[in-house]
Image (cartoon, rainbow, N blue to C red; front, side, top):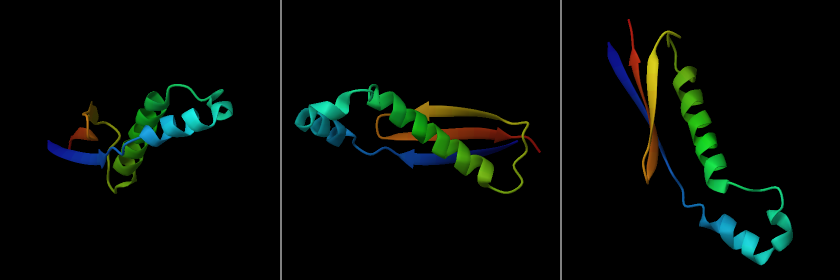
Length: 78
């Protein structure tokens, strides 16, 4: 088995709260900013993982969500 690790650094998202505080009208329909950001990061990790060459589809992976980064660790069976 071979382990592969992909890391994406998180960026501070406080500017969204500032925008909503300044412009109250744009906050409608835009809830759960943090959850949406984490979903986007997971999609980026999965896209990077499956875009690499010779990746078998029968592998297991785990997504780790820390304060400053999100990482994907996979066990590739050969």
